[in-house]
Image (cartoon, rainbow, N blue to C red; front, top):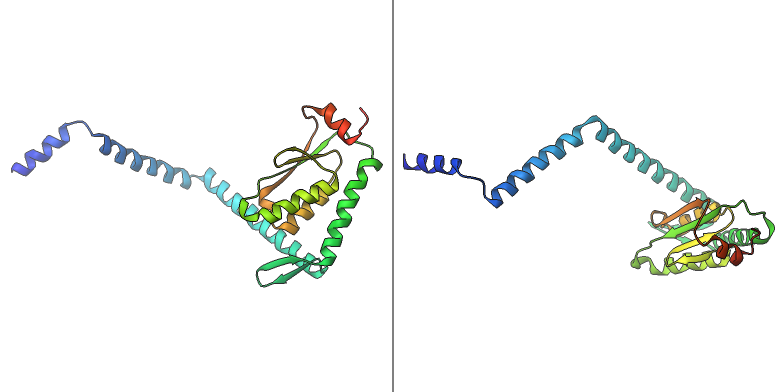
Length: 189
């Protein structure tokens, strides 16, 4: 009987810090579990999974096309660029560079942003060199800008380096310090 009175005494007092923490975590877990089972979050989860699967499939097809065209060589799980691939990349870089003088500016800026981890430092240097060769101007550490359409070049860089998840490309209609950039690229106002 002494045990019963001891338990009833515990039920009457306030919860301690650790007890509140345990109950809070369990309650959060229940809320999270309920959310994950809700129709909206499940649909979002499946949508993300489909997008990721589609992207992996498209990347696989692109790799197969590049292998077929002898632009890359497949050695087990590793891929390496061939001379033909380097030449194709060089032609695309030159084509992008020629746009600087030949094409009329559409008043939009193309921006390439990358955050490539240190373990890929050699590839990061190669991406940087390719952007410089193409005529991009570095705005910040890993932010580069160009005044003409160069989506094809950026796609090629992403495919060749296999670092597409670390490289972003976008089009801007306005950017601060635009006058300075226009002078750098020798663009008409």
